[in-house]
Image 1: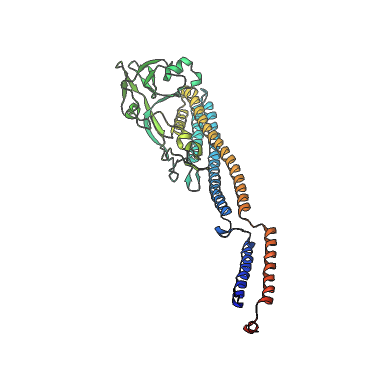
Image 2: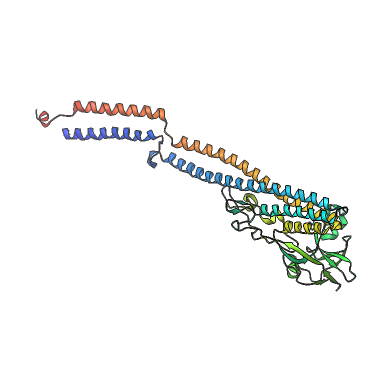
Length: 407
């Protein structure tokens, strides 16, 4: 086989280019990244892409947690202020439930209570940015507006801790019932009676069952009462055809313009579960629903009743229903505060966990794709040596001209 100088030159240049190409490829890693194309290391490239996807997800979850904590911290601070205000109202009701107060005293106390109510109503419309924190998913809508006066049904509030097990059973067929407010009725003999809107049972003032509403069903309350407590009928009858007049009086009631939907900020893969990853409390969670089906206004409406009863100097009501009502509304808001504080603590723990995971994933990405600097320096030096050697050898063995070949 004849080997020409051209063949030798061509082979030499191919080898020289390979040496130079290897050196150039190693130089690419000088930016700290060992992977610039999948062919550099297919296995490590796949691992790196997987790690980067996980990191991107974790960073989004971390941002969700931060947003959630900010939301819940604002809610918690607001609820703390509310509970402080409601504690003041409890104290004012206790002060007013004293027969030695004068008309002027009652007027002064009612004004103080009204100022506190205005503070609470302002807090109920709290915002974070341009979003109302207690409006549910309708967070661009102000949840509460000024109250309006209506003629609604009178309501009896019961301190369940003062009732016997028999009385609790009479109220709603079991001690597990949470019913503590009833519509006030008068029978044909002008005796006071209480209607349990949960089951249609009519009770006397000792909480003994004396009858059942005729035709009671799950839709009976919504048919006979508006959600603000205004009755659609003047009287009701029981199964024995006894008639009862619904007692009414002027009251101030509020309207809730939000909804009961939760805002979810997920912190892990999977479908959003409001019970686990919701960050907001709705008006119903804080202020409760009334016995007529009205949403998220029970506490505020009860506060206006307290104010009016104090102004009227109704000591009998204040020392019984008033004290119970003031305590109940305070406890309701405290329960909401505990709920959001607990949820906030859970999210703070999740933030710590996600921060730790982000650190770990970042290290995994570095291990999979970062340049090994000491090894790179060694490989570059070796490649440079090989390249320089190739140049040196080539200058000595490649024929310099065709005349050399013809000799």
